[in-house]
Image (cartoon, rainbow, N blue to C red):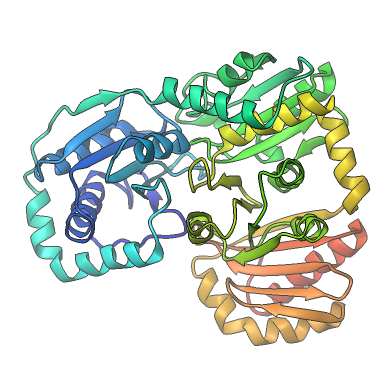
Length: 470
């Protein structure tokens, strides 16, 4: 039973290619490697609201019992950033989160988090895979007779909530009592973001606030098509702010009553601008290759450095931990902060964003200011079903670049993750294989909608001509 760590852990379809047997093998392989490399005395296990998540967490705990590890498990479904923060602050050697994050409801997953609260590095996950390939017979034999245990339960929520409130108030002060709609999308953020914002003085309505492994019949990803009713609520009833999260609350999107849906890209630029102004960011910012280049414009204005990395927050971690940069952002999910926990946290970002809006009067004003200063960019992502997207891009890289010369003068070609072409008019397009889903992704950004559509339409036609059908 082989496995592979993708961009953010091992994921698969529940009861098809992700089951109790695989979880036991993942746990045993991870514990063998971790105990030999780093030492393993204390383990924290968290899980989300998906089908069988608690069962899988119990399997992990049962495997850990064979090692005599001091193990704690969250008493209820808990956001990944909360588990990561608690584990890093209270001396756990290893953290395992059972989640498939934003994936459709049929998926679940196994995420390895270090004692610093960061995603396990490529080196560590590759070594776990290698260890299993060498010791698989003994590993399978070891997990064939594990005994069920009842580990100690823990609730990281109260301490995390207090930490976020105290942290945010050091940077921003609420001046206006805003009316906020919070949409946890039936996931683990229930009673986290809403509670924090209430304690910060906001008037909060929380919707979709019951755990549902089917997520109300939608994908648990805060993209516009999945939160249309929340967008209508904010725009139609004149709320000041809308906040939405994915299943495990590492992602964020926002809504304001004038612009409607604000993507993670928009949230990143707002939070980045105001953290730099306050002097919180002095050295640098990490931007995933797929993220808006408005980040670069902000960095240039204030004289801070931009580090461009592949998609996946594990690639941003080294810059946050080393002190090269204070903040990292990714278009699909949001932000991570070196002083908080070196992985993305949608709840912490929601608190920052709402306090910025409260201090400045409204979220509309804040976003209008970004547009006025840096221009309005248009951004789009198109997903193409494909099992071997990464291999396809590697094979087709040269012809992709050659053909893209047809739609503009190319200033730069970047190949750290797929192939990205930056044109002389500052528009750009990226084609890469997803690390979490069987898809090829096309990303593009331009400063006019016509230019954006031209690039995306051409890229789709190009892919079709190379044998794929979007």
